[in-house]
Image 1: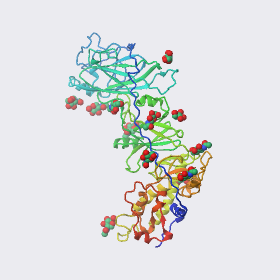
Image 2: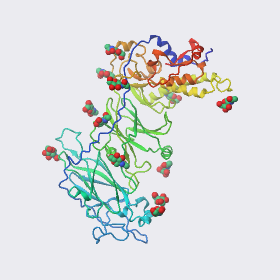
Image 3: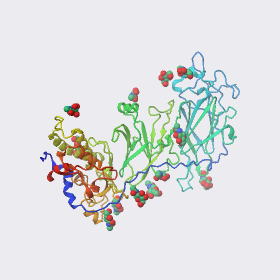
Image 4: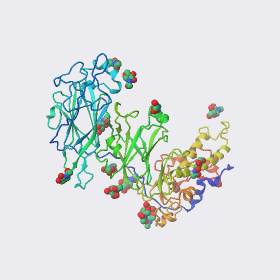
Length: 603
Ligand SMILES: *[C@@H]1O[C@H](CO)[C@@H](O)[C@H](O)[C@H]1NC(C)=O
Ligand SMILES: *[C@@H]1O[C@H](CO)[C@@H](O)[C@H](O)[C@H]1NC(C)=O
Ligand SMILES: *[C@@H]1O[C@H](CO)[C@@H](O)[C@H](O)[C@H]1NC(C)=O
Ligand SMILES: *[C@@H]1O[C@H](CO)[C@@H](O)[C@H](O)[C@H]1NC(C)=O
Ligand SMILES: *[C@@H]1O[C@H](CO)[C@@H](O)[C@H](O)[C@H]1NC(C)=O
Ligand SMILES: *[C@@H]1O[C@H](CO)[C@@H](O)[C@H](O)[C@H]1NC(C)=O
Ligand SMILES: *[C@@H]1O[C@H](CO)[C@@H](O)[C@H](O)[C@H]1NC(C)=O
Ligand SMILES: *[C@@H]1O[C@H](CO)[C@@H](O)[C@H](O)[C@H]1NC(C)=O
Ligand SMILES: *[C@@H]1O[C@H](CO)[C@@H](O)[C@H](O)[C@H]1NC(C)=O
Ligand SMILES: *[C@@H]1O[C@H](CO)[C@@H](O)[C@H](O)[C@H]1NC(C)=O
Ligand SMILES: *[C@@H]1O[C@H](CO)[C@@H](O)[C@H](O)[C@H]1NC(C)=O
Ligand SMILES: *[C@@H]1O[C@H](CO)[C@@H](O)[C@H](O)[C@H]1NC(C)=O
């Protein structure tokens, strides 16, 4: 069979063909590093350590009243001022006047406005009161006019109120305490929906109130009421801590202002020794995508902290605390971009975290800024949403770096063999250009084949040359850009292979095991040329590509090209066969049709 003329010598599998004669049985007994997905250890360190005695009410708030200038003259809340207290002097406690828009605020209580957060500091042992009057229900500051019209209609209706609190900063740990990971005592929120209990707190009978404790710096509560809501926020007394907490509290009739979800929204993709890549689980909605594409506005944000860090310990569900105290935040050490990678090609937001230390464990938290389209006061859900944190570990050897968003190999997003002295953009373009050039050669040869002629001469009715080109590209990207892990990784999967064992580590030490340094399967990279000549990493572990990627190529490309997957004992040196259900080896006639010199073993 005539070989079509293309740069055979530039094809990586051509070189590997000669190498297979030297192969002998080095078995690597390793398995995938399982990225640890975890459920954050939630320790409701609450009332047990808290001492709610010696509570003093905060009476620092001024009393003001405002009226609107409509004909009805309803009093209204100045939407942009937090903590503005509206008080109708002269009325009896519990009595209301007019259309019940405003009721008397308890002495010393701060007013909560619908969908507006109130930020306060609270000393250890202190109690602070809030008041969410019936009049503000259904009256989102952003749409007061319309809501006012319906207020009388809904006056007697039961309203669902969503109350949320986040702790933004914590008191200082007593210096005499050496255990810096000690559980943080959390805040307690007492809620009364009865006008006869306007100062709920630990000293009151619990029948008239409910108590909610924050966990990991976050508390939510939902209640149904026809009337006013009275809230007491209590900071516990603790000999271990001194100073004050700062927190945000918000009430809403629409939805929680601050939200928290246990879903693991962040998907860990891979890490190098200094960087890591995450994507979001799920996909962006059409509207979110539009904002991304038009305005380059991200929907999610991410916070990353060393697992040892104490700055956000006990506050992992608090948006404001993570925003203030995280080691890595967006724009600082975290870049976000839009990704459309396999398998679904659907748009996702991805996060690239840099400036990490090698072989360290980190905690990544994905969060939504506001309600994803807007944030801040006056916005329903404007306080953001925190998802379940996720631990990840960086690699140790300095040999692997995460690359993604390549122009040609656009689906590649994982750690690849690298060298600490090579910067990321050089690494990216080295791999991508090299692969794109190999593909160009292949494309020339594909054009020689009667691809776009009549149906009678096309090589297969079921597949066409585009399918072949795609399969070739997938295969080429997977084998020329190996998926890298630490040489020292331990696992019992056979789908990893030691590579480049003859080279030295970035710190100058070498592998001493002769089995590995002399076997041509393990002492060099998978393909000569790019990696050993230009990238020059130390010894690394290759996580092998799935064998299906080779079988797809053989199946979809014209037999004239003579592609073949390695067989028998050679297969596990190059491919992960563990997921292969039915191996589609080429038929006998295909094997017979290829001449020895034209045979391409797809190592
Ligand atoms: C994640 O890291 C935290 C903080 O170090 C630790 O307490 C937790 O056990 C880790 N979770 C997993 C699943 O490793
Ligand atoms: C106020 O409500 C009306 C009617 O529901 C709506 O058309 C309008 O967009 C809202 N305005 C704002 C600022 O939300
Ligand atoms: C007022 O409430 C009624 C009944 O709940 C509803 O049908 C109507 O659309 C509301 N009007 C406005 C302006 O929101
Ligand atoms: C720190 O703890 C010690 C021992 O429990 C206590 O005597 C001391 O008063 C505490 N200091 C502060 C500032 O709370
Ligand atoms: C309310 O808080 C609980 C516990 O943190 C959480 O599981 C739940 O998802 C929260 N609800 C919302 C809507 O954020
Ligand atoms: C883009 O930003 C502009 C101004 O910041 C805003 O007016 C517009 O609505 C935004 N577009 C989208 C699709 O979010
Ligand atoms: C984190 O803690 C581990 C185990 O306690 C320790 O080996 C490591 O050095 C610590 N890392 C940092 C950066 O403090
Ligand atoms: C050099 O790096 C390798 C791989 O990270 C490590 O196993 C080895 O202990 C290091 N040697 C020295 C002397 O630091
Ligand atoms: C890769 O190709 C791009 C565009 O062709 C070029 O700008 C860049 O210098 C090349 N990089 C390398 C490392 O060859
Ligand atoms: C030839 O292939 C084209 C495109 O695949 C198809 O539309 C056409 O029906 C085929 N013609 C015959 C005769 O099979
Ligand atoms: C790997 O080995 C461990 C312990 O020897 C075993 O528990 C685990 O199931 C093994 N994993 C696989 C994928 O074989
Ligand atoms: C060398 O590596 C091979 C393959 O990983 C292993 O089977 C063998 O035990 C190692 N030899 C020594 C001396 O560690």
